Length: 104
Picture 1 (cartoon, rainbow, N blue to C red):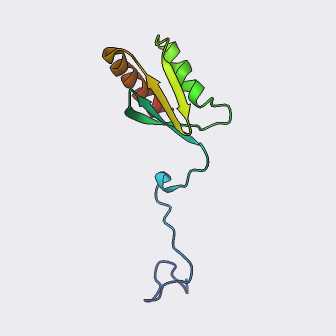
Picture 2 (picture 1 turned 60 degrees about the vertical axis):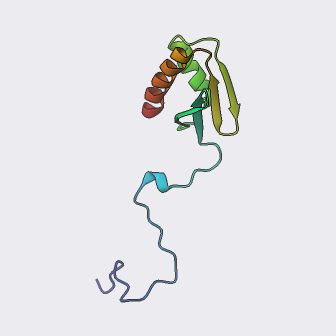
Picture 3 (picture 1 turned 180 degrees about the horizontal axis):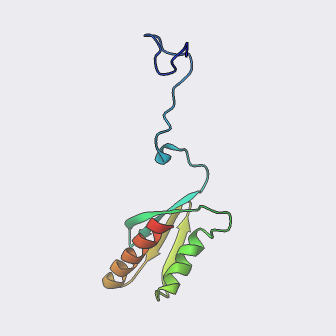
């Protein structure tokens, strides 16, 4: 090939070079993800991967399916805040959510 795209012969091209080596470098638009907190502790991100994902309501549905009822769940912007009264219950919720958020 007469021109090697990786060798600029000491000159930089007039256009910016953008690295695309990682999925985490991509720009998220809008509310594609929610940061999940339990009693002010960050647990992880809930990514909305499909149109009918449900977003915050899917987190609440998951917790109800695991036997956690009567939780105070608030959504503000891209944050889901879950308030649990008992410390043992909060730790169990964190454990369940960390697994759920890592596989979703």
